Image 1: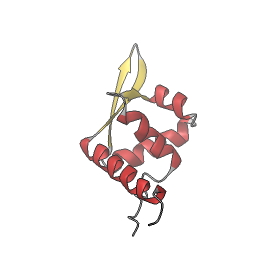
Image 2 (image 1 turned 120 degrees about the horizontal axis):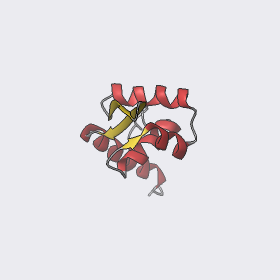
Image 3 (image 1 turned 90 degrees about the vertical axis):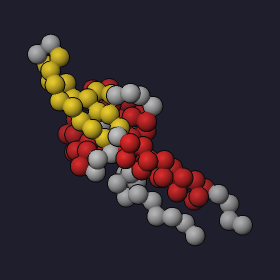
Image 4 (image 1 turned 120 degrees about the vertical axis):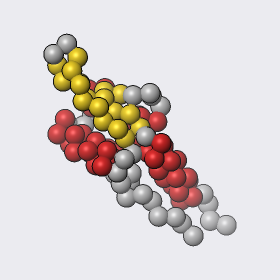
Length: 96
């Protein structure tokens, strides 16, 4: 039997954000936007959804008088991502 896929992570942009954050200590908004190719508005909405689920932590500050938004994956986010990948792998295994 197949496990349900996490609907929050089963969206391309949110999955991309989580994948990036799994491999770095933190990432700023511009870096994530450039790597995903997302528009600023869409990325902002998806980051908020991940933050509301407590999968990422968002820190807003200033750097040289410019706003700086930095994202970090949380332990809940790591667990959710790893569970998602495990569930997805079950879909890729041949049926016995």
